[in-house]
Every structure is written in C-alpha cells, then in structure tokens.
Image (tube, rainbow, N blue to C red; front, side, top):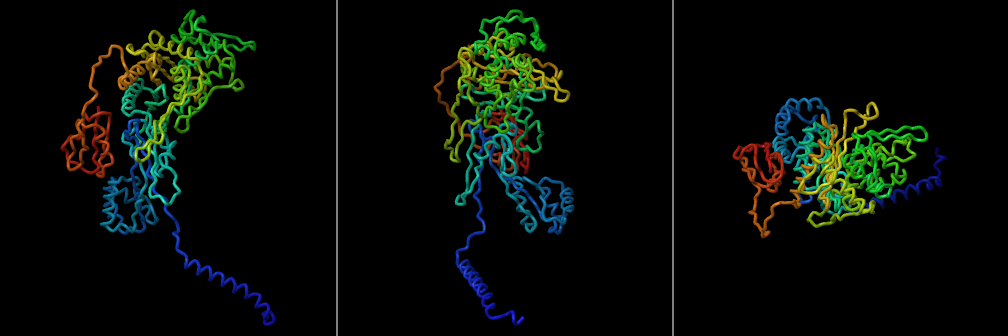
Length: 625
C-alpha cells in the first residue's frame, strides 16, 4: 500500500479534486450573492367573458364556487364536526359522519363540491370559530350561473369545474371567452363577451310553442330554427328535450344533444324544393313540362333491376308547381330521369348538402350524399334522393339551403354570434353577412318560392297559411330508419316543414322538425299548424307589417320611470310589476336565495307572497309576462 501512494500519484489525484472544490465554492459564493428568484410565478387570474343574447340579456355569467374538503385522520371529534357543517351544506348529518368514518385514515376527501358563495361565507366563519382550520380546505373554482336555466341550453352550452367549456358556445368559443395566458406581468386577464344572435324574449315564446306541440303530439324530440334569411343570423335555436344548465351534470344524453347541428336524418318531401330547383335551374325541365302521375313510378333498367316508388294519390297530368303542391313522389322521380347523375349530385352539393355549414358550434354533422361509386348506390338511388330519401341532412343544412331560395339564388352562411365585446363594452367583432357563390338563377329561386306559396294556399301546407302575410311552405313526412332490424320503421316518422316569409320580400326562414310523434304523423297536419303559430309570434314580435293592421301616429318619445332592484332583507319583497332587468342582479345574491324565473317581461305572480319572512336558501318563484 505504501508503494501505491507515491508522491506523483497523489499530486495527480489531488489537483483535479482541489480544482473541483474551488469551482464548487466559487459557484456557491456567486449564487449566495445573486438576487433570489421566486421558485415559481403564479399566472394571472382569468375573468371569463359572459354569454348574452343579441340585446345584452345575460345567458351565462361568471361566478365562483368552492369545493369543501377535509383531512379525516386529523379530525378528533367527527360527530361534532358532522353536526356542525352538515346543516350549512344541506347534507344529512349521519351520512356525512359515515363518509368521514369510512375514510378516517385518509389524507384528504371532499365533503361537498361546488358550494355557493353564501355557503362558503357561512362555513368559513364556522371553521374559524371552531378551530377546524387545520383539517379543512376550500378550493376556489370558476363557475357559471345560467339565469334562464334551460333556455337555448344546447346552444349556450356548459362550463365544467376546471373552467373549460364542455358543450355549445361555452366549448367552441373557449379561447374567446377565457383566453390562455402566459404573461406573468398581468394581474387579471379578461375574456370577451359574446352576444349571440338569438333574442331571449323570442326564444322563450317559441320554446313555449315548441313544448306545447311536443306535448300534444307526444313526440320524443323536436327542433325549431328561425333565421334571418338576409344575413344568416339565427334568431331562435330550439332543441327539445332540453336541460337546466345550472344542473347540467344531472341531465340525460337526450337532454344534452344538440340536434340541429349533430343529428342527420332523411328529410323526406321537404327536400323536393331543392331537387326541383336543380331540375329547373339546369334546364332539365321547364315550368311547363308535364308529368303523368298514375300513383307510382316504375322503371326497369337494362340490367333487369326493377324500381318502384309509390305516390299517395293519382294526380294525373301535372307540372312541377303542382308536383310540389301535392308533394307528388311519382312526378319528382320522373324528373330525375331528365338530369344526369353527376350534374344532379353537383347541384345538391352546391346547395350545401353533404358538407358542414361551418356554424360556430362543436361536432357539427356533415350529412350524407352518396357518390355513384358508393357500395350502396343503385339504379333506385337518384329517383329516391329526388324525394328526400337515401340521403341525410341536418336541420342547419336545410335552413342554409333555404337561404339560397330566399335570397334569389345566393346562399348566406349561418351564424349564432352577433358580436363580441371587451370588458368595457367596446365592440371587437360585429357580424356581417357572408354571402356565398350563386347556386341558382334568380328566376329559379323566385319560381320555387312561388310554388311554396301555392303549397301554403291550396296544397299540403294550407294549415301553415297566415292569410294576412304571404308565406311559402313545404311539408314532409319521412319514415325513420329502423336501427335494430334494418330498413325503415313502420312506426317511427320524422315530420318537418320549411317556411319562408314574406314571399314578396323574404326575411325569415322557419324550419320545424317533430320526431317520433304518436298517433297522427302527417306533417301537413301536425307541423304546419305549429309553423303558422310560430310565424305569427315572430311577425308580431318583430313588428312586421300585416295587411289591414291598425296603425297610429306617435311622437316617438316616451318616458319610463327608473326601476330600482329590490333588496333582500328580512321579508320577501313585492316583485309585482317589476321588469326582468330589475331582478337579474339578485341572481348572485349572497344569502343563498334561489330565484326561479319563468317567462319574459314583467312580474305577474310570485311565490311566496310579499311580506313572507325571508330565510337562508329560500326559493322564490317569479312568473313574467
């Protein structure tokens, strides 16, 4: 060993070691004298923007919730703790105690998630006064309040506990409402406010009509879209059944489903307005071309394939106008023989079918338009597509296709966003109509619209006729696919109707779909009357001129006294006669009072009545008209 530790060897080994120690010491001194940097920097908070209707009525408003959790193994007196906090959280004492006992050795568990600000304020005082702080924790999370509950629920969508949108506009416009941040120098980042195109008052009125229709027909679901044909803005967007957005996690899949955007289906005879437009526009037929309807369309191909499409009646010699008026399957199938397949498919696709509309909603379906090389294409396909079968569409595609007819052959892109503003109300985006390339000659679009008016006055859509305002309609009843046994169901039908009005100056497109009605399913009987009722409501609400309507002169000036928001003190206030705008500020009250608002306008009834002692977590129901 002594021979091994020679002087030269020790010098060679020690010099690098000494140099390494000197380097480490120098770096230590340098770091010790450097200004200390924080280990991590907290990102600025984000204030999520609101979702409001086109007039600024709040539909989704930012608020805060709290998750209340504990460390069970640190709780010394579990019984006392459960008895103290359970009443505040509206929980069963025994159930709370059982959960804590079951997790007595756990490091953490939540007692209740998403407690309100009022529950948090009261609970925080109890935690402090009873020295529960060492084992209790509050996790603040961003939340939403939806003042109108289920109104336009699938359109508005829902925000989850993590501050991310899960559906609807809340999901598709996440980056606008709550932008991602990386700048540590900011205190708070504010999202943009989104003004939807819908009018909350009109939406409420049409939802009531839709719900009544759904109840009277015992239907499983229903869709209603009302759009301004001139700029593509959707004024009402209805998908039933709907869900209360304040209790979204409890909703069923059917209540969450955004049918107008995501459901594709065979539209049946309503689609005839588009196929007839294609035949007329290409010159395959003229307005005077005659077709003989003998009750069925039959054809045998040169390969021996037999085609048979039945009609509901024997209409005799008819033109395209009469074919639409009577919804004649035989004549429409005959028309398909006059136009080549590729040209036919091109016309249908030009109208927007088989492609997403590009509206600002998530998971929009494309629908299905077959190609000739499709494995399911047959000699029967084109005449069947001519009457609205062997293809699928969405309600949004149907409305966008109708804009081409309403706008003289030029479709307009649909939208549900009217504008966006910053936190100070400055407009950052304002929607302008986005017109697409012309897909029909103006003469063709005008002719189809006049045929739809004929259908309303003397055809299958007479129950949609308004009388004092011109309206064009087309009804359709389609057998739905039997997804269990294949083929078409003999009991399930989809009944729908398209309307455009006024005919001489098209402004509104109204489209209604009723699915799986019980009993009567014929669209001319169950959907056309709903079209008339909804159109009446739209016309009156928008102030459209009616023939023979009384008129009067007014200076245009009137005064409205200032309306103050009532205070929630010891007793229930007198809400009678107050406008909804005066009640909205109370939705985020700090006493836990649950205000249930039904309708629009001014308060006509309240429960409980004014003067009733006000208690924590009380529910007050207000009806507006």
